[in-house]
Image 1 (spheres, rainbow, N blue to C red):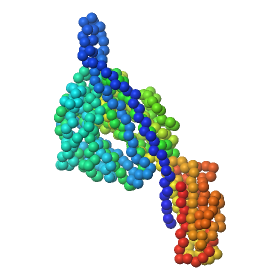
Image 2: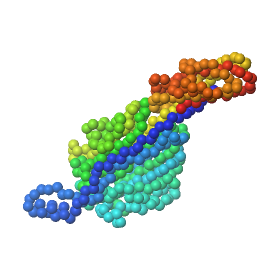
Image 3: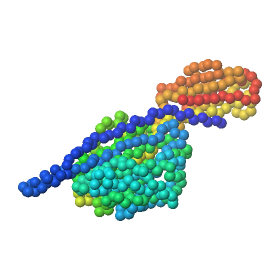
Image 4: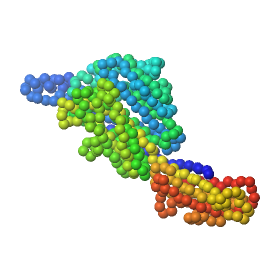
Length: 444
């Protein structure tokens, strides 16, 4: 018995990045003057705070059907409140490291990037130190209820130092913020035992605190992930990373919404139309003040996108989470067409065939992928000096040439759903003696 798997080709979805938040500019001095003037005349006003905008999450994608080794994602975090270092222990990378990033986040009392923030930290693997050169990925972003607190998010590539297997990773030297929130290690890996996967990573620094939205604009923006449709349900693993949520103010939500057809150009809030994935998902699970919330959702057949959106609840303002949404990830099997061919000699059932006797083969065509196959071409090649084609079931070839039989579409007027099989029997007459002859079938 011989088996040949021939993958169909599949297109990769084009990421749609939604960004509708603008930059609001104001002047703290002017706001202070207005408040003072209003107080003088007994007028109550809401001050307009100055500061840089936060950064809604933006998606990037990894993985295609052509990957010989499927991709996977491992994420874990650790809090940094009141300390300058913390460790992630028992971090397991079950494959070859492709890319690894560190994100860390804190607040400072200035939006001057020359004097604020903390751009000098150390990444330790086991007992080996590596001084990082991070980039300021987002911020400084002014916090809603504070006139002089800005949030910073740094990102560093640590690919050379992250290893396959279990290890301990430490971030230290985080000592220049007004106060720290935490850090996250994100590792993209490959594993030949995994089917092709689509990995989506949305990163940013999106702030919300109940009704006290940042001076730069409205609350947390939804993030859109797009993908090719499959014909089966796929289970997707997700992680949502947030900083700054304190234990006495944890009221928050995480929503998602599945979509079909063409993804929307403009994504609106899904708080009333989406599904509540979790109430209060952020509870300092990684230590003060950091969270990596993990869950899974089902991607139904024919779905083409999913939207996620975190929220700082507004029902009880005193309990609303001071939420810094930093990462949203999603990982699931890519929609990949794949055809399997299995061919067996059925006549003679054993031993050689004599000249003039029939020789029959069974060709099993199977949909091994997770998409519907609308057209499957089958080609059978043989040595025409040794074999003469006499017939086939269930249908005759659409074309015949010397040593080649072609069925342009074995699905006929239908299609092949995942796991569907079509069996062909092809019969020849032996023309001449030989020790062995090869008959090969392929499907595309």
